Image: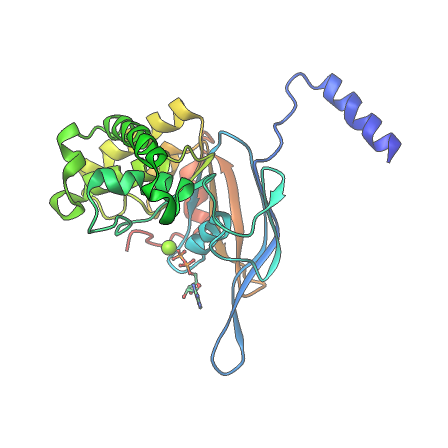
Length: 279
Ligand SMILES: Nc1ncnc2c1ncn2[C@@H]1O[C@H](COP(=O)(O)OP(=O)(O)O)[C@@H](O)[C@H]1O
Ligand SMILES: [Mg+2]
C-alpha cells in the first residue's frame, strides 16, 4: 500500500501533466432485460469506460446495439444489472442536475411556453408546490427567467420566442430550447441522444456549430450519440463504437479512438461492420 502510493507520488512528479481523474467511470457494466418466458436478453456486457472532464465523446453503433441504454445509465435513469457507474467520485443511483439530457425530440412540455420550459427545472429544484406562494419564490423566479433569457440568446433564439409554445417553433428551434433547458441547470455533463437526427441537413449543420461552441465556452463534458459517422468525428474529441461481441450476447466497446486519428472514419466503419447506420 505504502510503496504503491510512493510510486504514484513519484509518477506525479515525473509526469508534467498527469492525466485528469475520470469524471465518469463505468466498471464492468452489464445490462440484461428479463423477457417473457424466463430467458433474459443482454444488451450491454463488459463495458469499461473512463471519460475525463471536458471530453466530447461520440458514441456510434447500429440501431439496437445499446447506445441509448448506455446514455440512460450515465443519466441515472436506469441501473445496470451488474457493475458500477461512478460520476465525480460517487456511484450514481438517480438523475440529478449535474447531468443534462437532450433526446431526439418531444422533450419539451407542450403546454408550457418556451421560457416556462426552460425555468421548470430550476423552479422544481428550489420550490415545492407549497412554497410557491412565498415572496421569495417571486424574487427567485425573476432570477430564473433572466437566466433562461440568457440561455435563449446563447442558443440564437429571439427574446420574442420566449412566450411561444413548442408547437409554434420549427424542429431546430425546439431542439435549441431543449438544449437551453438542459444548460440552464449548468450540468457538468451533457448527454445528447441523436439530438440532431430529426433535423434537416442545413439546420443540423447549424446545430453542430452551436454545440461545439457551447462545449468550448462551458467546458461541459459531452456525450453525443449519433448514427452519423461524419457528425461523430467532426464534433468529438474521441469516438467509441458499440457493437455486438461475437463471443457474447451483449454489445461491448469495439473501438475507442481519438477523433483526430488519421484513419478514424475507416476504423469506425470497420468496427460497425460497414453497416448503413443512417437507415
Ligand atoms: N426496457 C427494456 N426492456 C427490454 N428491452 C429493452 C429495453 N430497453 C431497451 N431494450 C432493448 O435493448 C436494445 C438496445 O436498445 P437501445 O439502447 O435503445 O439501442 P440503440 O439506442 O443503440 O438503438 C434493443 O434491442 C432494445 O429493444
Ligand atoms: Mg437509441
